[in-house]
Length: 339
Image 1: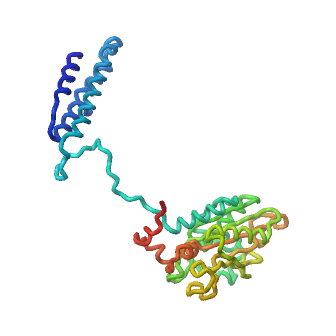
Image 2: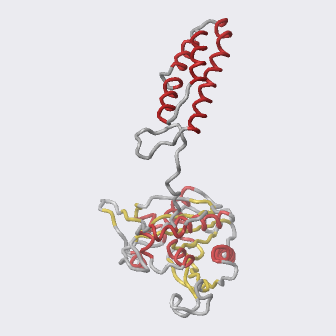
Image 3: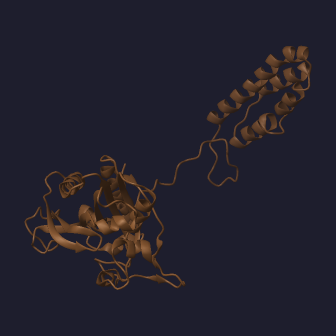
């Protein structure tokens, strides 16, 4: 075997080539899966300890010399023509696919979650096909409640009433049924309404709702929490105001406005020259909702809020047509690439 090794070593040292094809053929002949050096290593495994000790260094030297010879010749021979069928699969691949970017709605959702996570909020998720109890009744909206008209939705053909959820508040109901306070959670997800599709509305969109339940939670806690979020999301110069409103599951309830992000509160077409833009609804959780979920309303209090991710994205990025979020136009999406 030592004679075979020495003969191959002389062959490697004397080998010359002028083109890449010859170099590749030599590599396969010597170092390929069925090459002569590979076969020698297979034979080497069957030898006794004394023979291995004598031949090991010589065999490793042969392999190293062959590898070095191949690398040197690759650098010196003429590169392969683009028209040749021969390819060097040992060379590293050339990156030709550009990295993708996150959807603007995903960017905004992660920004919102990041801000509230600093305040101790965690994320909860639930089903998009929801039963009547979790989507309506447990939230103080029974079958004959007029507020259901505001959330006209898509019903599933099933003996028991199921709907495509109209709000992610249903996730909060499920969480309160399973967990006692303290609760501090965000519920992001897709929701559905029977809306005509336009530049400002869609039959499907994305919400993120928050819930905080504990001892002695007050409306002042709600205002401080939302003020912190608004200033972190839109900037410290942004002003905030709350207007009385109505939601079946909160009392008192409020709409939250921010100073227009496009005109800095001076008045423009987007804010209808009012200087303010509505961004979310909020309020203190109605005690009856706590009772529906098995939480002691005499001991605990809490607040809830909800916002549309599309609306916040439109305000943050200056987008005037909501339909752009659903069209998958790369010319639109590539604008939101983040390094």
